[in-house]
Amino acid sequence: MKIVNGASLQPKSGAKPGQIVLLLHGFGSNGRDMVALAPAWQQSMPDALFLAPHAPQACAMGTGYQWWPLADISPAALARGAASAAPAIDSFIDRKLEQYGLGEADLAIVGFSQGAMMALHVGLRRPKAAACLVGYSGMLTGAPQLQHALVSKPPVLLVHGAQDPVVPVAALHDAERVLKHLDIEVRTHISQNTGHIVDPAGLRLGGEFVARALGL
Image 1 (tube, rainbow, N blue to C red):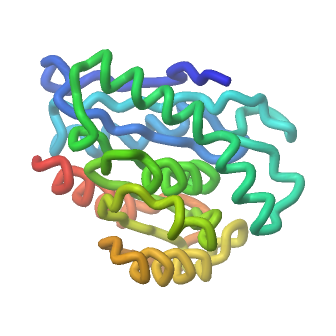
Image 2 (cartoon, rainbow, N blue to C red):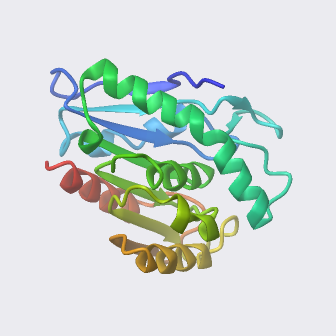
C-alpha cells in the first residue's frame, strides 16, 4: 500500500530543501491538518520541506484517513496495526530522501495521536537514525517487541495534555520509561489544562527540538 503527499509546505527560503520534516496526522484527520503546524516552525527552519501525507486508508468512521482501523485498541491490536502501516511510511521516506538527495540526519518525524504511534514505530526501526522523533498525544506501541526490533536510537520528544480524554497522559509516562530503559534520549512535556490537542507551548517546544536536532 502506497501513500502520496497530502499536503506540503515548501522551504521558506525558496532554496532547494535541506531538511525534511515529516508530519503524520491522527485517526480521522488528514495531511492538511498537520501541515498547519509548519508555519510556526519555518522561521527557525527556513530550508526545511514539510511533508504531510494522508494515511493510505479512508477512515472507517466519518471523513478523513486512518493508518489502520481502531475497532480494537488492545495493546496487541495497536502493535499489529502500527506494524501493518509502517511499510507505506518507510517507502514514502525512502522515496523523498532520494528525490531530494538527503540523508536520515536531515529527517525529522513528527506525529499526532495515531500519527505519533506511527512516528515512534517507524522512527525506532529504521536502519539509520533520523535526526529526531516528536510524538504529540500518542503512545508507544509494541513495547515488548521493541528491544528485539530496535535498530536506531534517535532522540525523542513526547508532549501530552494533562487532561487528554482520548489518549491518557499515562501513555507518555509508559513510553518514557521504555525508551529510557533502551538508552534512548527522551524528553517530555506535559501541558496542564490541555486535552487532545497541540497547544502553543507544545508547538514551540517541538519546533525548538526539531531545529536543534537538525543542526539549525
